Every structure is written in structure tokens, then in C-alpha cells.
Image (cartoon, rainbow, N blue to C red; front, side, top):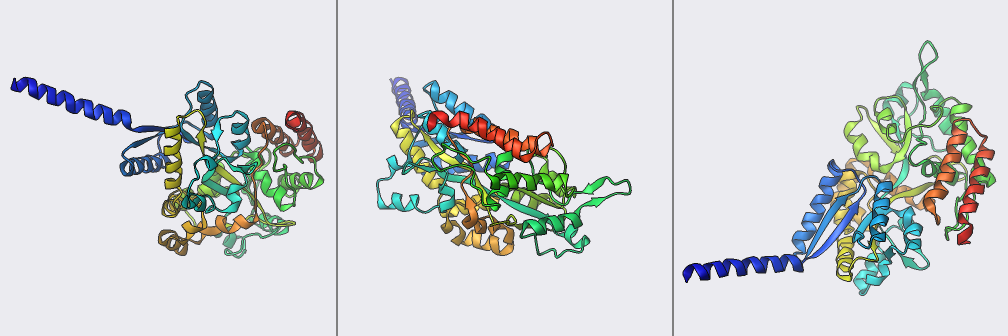
Length: 426
């Protein structure tokens, strides 16, 4: 009898544990990074901490590859009826996600004054790509702008002030000319400036176009201005850096190798994401500076990076838990630490008032350059059928940079293709 009672007790305890596990709300969270590395450890830590503080919820990160791979996997899962509960996807995917009826607006979960205050707490520039038709579809998390990194030792060697980065296009050419080094045979050993044109050409190009006072798309995502005179002038200037002034590598410059080229001294100045800040700080063997992008008619950079989205076909309990996780992730202290650990921009002004980020910024001034550039920032290019529209522009940019088309012809061809793709949405 004692054995029978003991067995019954064990079985009952196991049933209680199983019931408790089943009662937990499971939240699958797609995150755009390959498996392994420091970012995954940070996200795993966030999920573990949230789960510990919320025992009725289990957030499970799923590392789905690149941003491109992650949206493909997310939409495939959505169409199969088993989407992730939430995902970090490019803010520029918002129109696509709405058109696929894949996501729900965050407004669905905003019930209290605290919720409303939270929704208003983010930098306005980071909300530009997430708010459409008076609804907020995505919350900023892994966000960035394009900034300039420059090698202070190379500046000194060229007789330039190491504390003064080029502030205008004219200064960019003048300093880039002094910073470009060639050996006795005329081969370049150090480029003055390097701007990547693979991976996200349109994004880097938006630096040039914004500085030339050109806006590439309307806010409704239905029309583009790729063939605008100001846009053409911006591409011409990018082309001139290599083809006329000879201070920039010719052809297509690789996105992935640009930070390494900088750290290896192959280029004295580069444009890339603030998301590379921590990597460069840890690995550059020289003192470097970070600056806003130079101005022509105005200063400017597109915003960039990923937003937090909640999927429509996920059960309501999962959606609500994902919303709570989004609020938890973006609290000022956590946003501040995320910025310190990764180099991405903290998404709210309150994060920069935390003791941790104040201390970090006091010790490492480049940490606030991207924040200070936000008042000059514009929405990242985003339209309906966004991937094909941006591909049309990317193809045009690369045709110009490789010399196979003039700037005018390259962008006129891109305009024709983009207009064709967007016609159903007009």
C-alpha cells in the first residue's frame, strides 16, 4: 500500500509539473542573426531573464539567419498557419508585412496610460518606418543610422586635424585626396574614403541623396523619385569619388569586408552602420573617430535596422505575452545596455539619461554620434513590394558605380521598373 501511495504521489506531482508546463504561454521569437556569436548570447540572456521574471511565459529565440532569410522564414511560417509569435525584421518590411496581412498593430495592446506613454517614448525618427495609416505596426529595437568612421592616425600622417572629420562634400573630396596613398608603381595602398555598395546599396546611397535634399519615396510607399535631378546628382557624386577623384575603390565595394578594410588600414574613412561601433572599438589597432555624415545641401542619413513585430495568426495569449516582452526589451536601462554591448542606437531619449549610458558616453564620445544625427535623419526607403523596388534601385546604383551606365540612365531605368511594380498600389 505504501508503494502504491508513493507511486500515486509521484504520478500526481509529475502531472502537476506537466500541467504547469502546458499552462505556460510559449512565445517563439525570430531574431535575424546566424547561430552563435555575442549577439545570440545577449538575446538568450534577455529571454532567460524575462522568463524568470514571468514564470507563466516562455520566450524561445530562434536565430533565423540574415534579415532577408528571417522575413522569408517568417512569411513562409505565416502562410502555413504556424507563424512565429514575434520577430525582429527590417523596419522597411512593414508595408510587405501589412500587405501579407501577417502582423497586428501594436495599438491593439495599448490599454493604459503607461502603455500610451511607452508608445510615445521612442525617438521620432525611429518611428517613421513603423507608423502607417495612423497605426504603429512595429516597435524600434535593433536600430541604427549610417555614420562615418575615420582613422585618426591616418589623419595625422596626412597633416590633417585628427579631431575634425569632413563636414561637407567639398571637404570629403579634399581630405580624401590627402588620405589616399599610392606606392611607387601607382597602386593604392590606402583609399581616402570607402562606401560599401553591396548588401544594402540603397541604404548607403540614401546618405548621399538625403544630403543632396532628395527624398526617394513618398510616405504612403506608392511612388518613388529615383529619376529626380537631385537623386541623379547624388549618384553622380558617389561615382565621381572613384571615377573622377580616384579616392574611392572602383566598382562594387563589399558590405561585409568594409569594417575589416578600415581596421587593416586599407581605407582611412568608411561609411557603415553604427552597429559596427563595438566591433571596431574592440578590434581597431589605432585611435579612430566617429562623425556624422558630411553635408551638401543639408546633413542627413537614413535610419536603419530592425523593428519588433507581432504576428496576426499567433494565439491572442501569445500576442499579449509578446507585447509584454517588447515593452520589457525596450525599457531605458535595457536599451542603454544593448547600445553599450552592440553599438546600436538606444531607441529612446530616456535610455541616454540612465547612469550606465551617461557613464559610457562620458568615457567614449562616439557612442552618442548616431543619436545626435537623428534630428537630421529620414525614413529608410520603404515601399509596397519593397524588396523588388529596392532591387531595382540597387541594380541601378551598381550599374552606375561599375561604369556600365551613366547616373542618369541608371536611375531612369530604376524608376521605370519601380513605377511598374508600384502601379497596383496607386
